[in-house]
Image 1 (cartoon, rainbow over the protein chains, first blue to last red):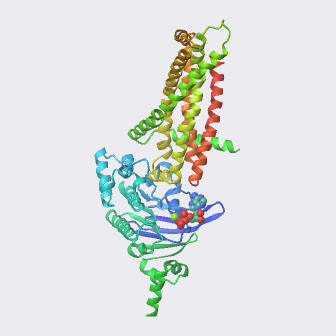
Image 2 (cartoon, helix red, strand yellow; image 1 turned 30 degrees about the vertical axis):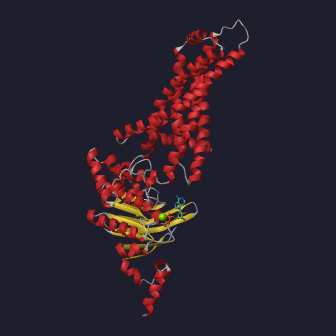
Length: 253
Length: 246
Ligand SMILES: Nc1ncnc2c1ncn2[C@@H]1O[C@H](COP(=O)(O)OP(=O)(O)O)[C@@H](O)[C@H]1O
Ligand SMILES: [Mg+2]
């Protein structure tokens, strides 16, 4: 379980997080949604220590991350998988080396076992044909999939995915959502997905958290979203003209 | 004030960098890669530059000797001394800043802005030690070898030029190269090249590692790295020279 208690974070005069409290249950699938610039990435980075919050706590199974010493923080980090918004693949390494890397650094597996594992995860994301390619030779969707394979290769307890399907075509998006969802169930991971893709919200959103201008404005299940009266959230959900049309038709019936 | 702050965070970075690597095997494989990229990759450049410098020293020295009382073997002597004492360390050092230093700053800066460094940190890797330590080790190891290589090329080039132009007969030149040879000069040269190897790898690494922003800022960091590393290198050149040769 991960808990955020009253996290505040400013960059200079820009108050990005204004006291956010969230709880993510073990083995659950959580979606953080919100407009661009609302502070979603900042929340994730505060949670894993890439930013230090100005005040508030982040608890990983009760352990207060920002008050731990370096070694204890490192132990928690070994349990974290993180897919960055821009994938952040190591561009000097091949796809296979990227995915092997966490295992090579921290597991006691032999060279061959590491290789087998990496290949197994790349197969899961449908990239067994791309082992020897470099990140610069991949498409955006392939990079995301390598990023996911790298994030889960060391068997994390907590998985963070920052906009896993931004910039992907709708079909690839669905594949990636399903992939993350099935991995979450298979390995009982606590997964946190940052997204503004309503399609993902509907298909895999178990718990949804709506961030608006640095505050948690709403939380609930994906079903509850459809009936919410919260104005900012309905504006966000029905932003696309297609959905607006559908909504109007339903109402007029 | 700004300078003091930079020195402080540079020292802090070094203290995090000079840590025992997490995986020795991974460290050595990165070390070998850096040695081949920075060391072997710089050989052609060092060869060309040392060749021309050796040749030029011979011509300049010869053109300044007009008195028949000054023996021609002094040309060989001067070439050897100039290469050992200054050219093969300082000049080659400055050139390596442009080649190796700027590429270190660019590589780390790019890794910073594309969040590759954050990715390492999240995995629990000490990114400073992982990325920077192999580079420092590699350059401290390789730079003295490049210096010796450069001295050799410069002296041989001088001999050819002296012989071909008729400015200094080969026999005289070889005599001069052996004349009044002091091992301490070579020691001085090698100590400089070790210190320079450390400077040329660690200062650009500092500028690259802490880049903020985008591609433009990576370019700026690379330029600053070259400027400041050059200044520090010349300053340290003076300090070591005063300490060792006075
Ligand atoms: N490292 C940083 N330095 C300064 N400002 C930042 C930094 N990271 C994010 N911000 C600011 O914080 C706000 C929220 O950014 P972010 O969390 O990336 O939004 P989101 O992920 O929801 O699109 C933005 O206004 C952005 O400019
Ligand atoms: Mg973001």
